[in-house]
Amino acid sequence: MNPARRTFAELVAEGAAVPTEGWDFSWFAGRATEARPSWGYARSAGERLAGAEAALDIQTGGGEVLAFSLAAAPARPRLVAATEGWAPNTARATELLRPHGVVVVAAPDDAPLPFADGAFDLVLSRHPVVPHWDEIARVLRPGGTYFAQHVGPASVFELVEHFLGPQPEAGRGARDPLRERAAAEAAGLEIVALPAERLRMEFHDIAAVVHFLRKVVWMVPGFTVEAYEPQLRALHERIQREGPFVAHSSRHLFDARKPR
Image 1: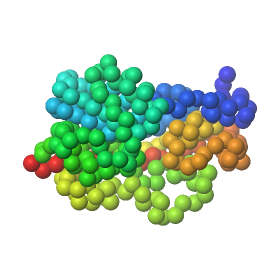
Image 2: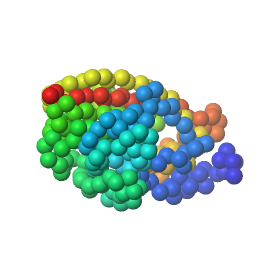
Image 3: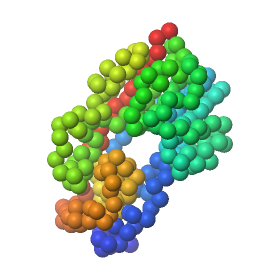
Image 4: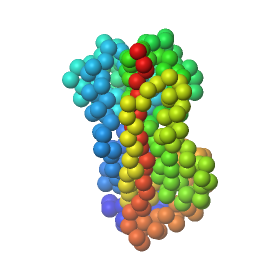
């Protein structure tokens, strides 16, 4: 049925029922859109993998992005490992990445990486919660590369502020690429490139909003349909009246190197 003809309750129930494991966003097709950064992270990571001997993907989620990058790579490293801290994602990533020969290690996001010093010449990550620069630098070999796409400052804040109200400037500055650059350099890494882009997003129905907030849990911490029913209903009525709700994601790409 056309989402525009469905009731608020039906759409909210659908968004609340969709599984949230992994980073496969195919369910959003036709319901939400997000422009992609010009650098094409997954394919670019595949090119980096082709030239690596040992690679590590930090906070791999369900392994979907790494699997795509490996499939796109014209050659593969001798060793590929991945870490993930959330148990449902660890199981999903193991199932998806085992056929690619990837070792998936369950490791909390805030714990030291369970690998020896200088174990990898390539470290990847797509949207790490917090980059632990000292650990990234430690597991990289001299001359090795950290290649990662990060979420930038005030990402999707139009949606966040609909639910939480105006956010303080300190919150808007979190994940600032210049601050992250300084932290990376303090850990001993050299920045080769650090492009940043702000990208249009559209939510076409309230089911997409519900599923997004359940999946990307740090946007509205503690989000539940029951707790935010008034805001959800108001946004549903706005979408019905005005069309898609527009927000903007923020992304930057780290290309960093450990000096020889």
